[in-house]
Amino acid sequence: QKLSINERYFSLLSIANIVEDIDLEADFIYPLSQNNSVSIAQNPALLKISKQQNRFEKEAKALDHSIKSIEFFGEIEREPDQDIQRVGIALSLPLFNTNKQKAELSKIRANQSALLLKELKIKQQLEIKTLQQNISNLREQYNASKKQQKKLNKLLELFEEGYKISKGSLLELIDVKNRVIKKQRKLLQIQKESNLKQIQLNFIQGKYND
Image (cartoon, rainbow, N blue to C red; front, side):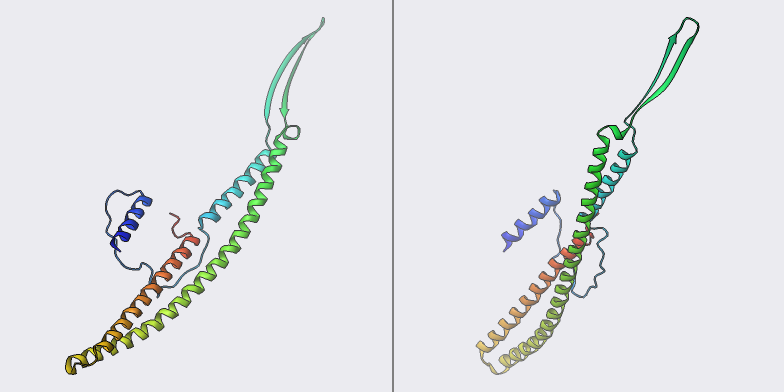
């Protein structure tokens, strides 16, 4: 167990690119009693797609109205009786070059990003509802198990007291102790599952998006 803990500890340090030792408290970081506020405005995946869409839209708009090049020219034409001066501007417009095609491609990409963004929002909203429901179910299960644990603790106290006084059945005492340990493990497992789902929920909502 200690070897497994050490492996996970140093794996976390490696992921975080940290050299110095860090003291980690052996507690669950998200209690089952906390309330969850829901928002996916800062979700990393949504932000990425939203920025892509915005970039493609700006590209399309810029290419639609851009002038590829401007050329000023002037010339003098000499005639026997006069000199004729000409000044002009040569414009290379998007209509006659590849800018038009690039603009259309950017528009298509912007539309694709918009559809992907909409699809991802729906998917993540469903994931959020599922995780919230799971956490709620785990909270109910935890509260019920907690009540059972209190009853088992009282029962254990009675058996321990009876064993001290009358040297009652040792096997019955051991059985109750095992039931208490089993219930405690169950409570820890529920807390672990709840924390994992809470971490997933926080990630979807972008709470780790520093």
